[in-house]
Structure formats: C-alpha cells, structure tokens
Image 1 (cartoon, rainbow, N blue to C red):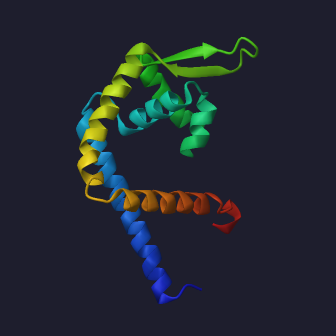
Image 2 (cartoon, rainbow, N blue to C red):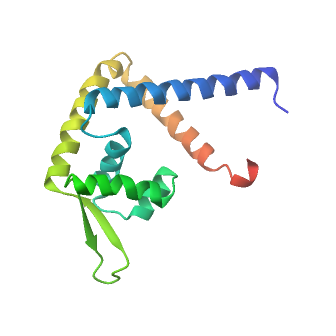
Length: 151
C-alpha cells in the first residue's frame, strides 16, 4: 500500500507527464500546422533515425496495433514522403524508408521544433540537462521493465 507521500509523488508524476506531453504535442502542432499530424511527424522521425523499418517495428516502438501504424503510413505514402520496399529475400517483408521529399519535410520540421525548444534548454546549465536526461532514461527503463502482469 502506498503512503500518502507516495500517492502524492505518483499524482505529481502523472500530472507532469500529461502536461509535458500535451504542451510538446501542441508545440509540434503549431510548427507543422496542417501539413502533418504529430503521429506522422513522430513516424517520420523514427524512420529517419532507423534508416528503414517495418510497420510491425513501428507498432512495437509506439506501443500500438499495426493497423494504427498502417493508416499513418498510408497517408505518408500518399504524400510521397515514405516509400515501401519489398525485401528481396522474403517478399512478405515490406521495409519503409523516407523519400527525398519525406527527408526534406522531416528535416525542415525538425529544425523548426529544435529552434523553438532551444531557448528552454538554455535556461538550464549543461550539467542540469545531462543529469535530468540521465534520470529520465532511468525512469524510462524502470517503467519499461514493469511487466503487464503487474497491471
């Protein structure tokens, strides 16, 4: 059983997580406008970082069903920002990668977001940012290690 202090910590964490996600998503929406959704941007970002990946890998990364990723990929494909390449060794596997146009859209959007976030980062000392990110990565690992049986 959690103590009152622990409940307060959990509440504070949940509230902060929700607030930061909402504000960051709003920031991305302000930058990208109607050109693409937050989900499309994060999908482009993941494909850019990976170089290429499958829809199943994206679904696992985002913790969603493959059908949710498929609809995002279809829209990105229609905009000619993503291409689908069949694996010559196993034609059942389709690899996704960014087109030149997709790389341009991602790079321009990413630069705009970085420029908006940069003043916030400059409010902290470098050591503070590094410590914060290290703790955030630790929290990510700890939460990721929670087994579904514990829900």
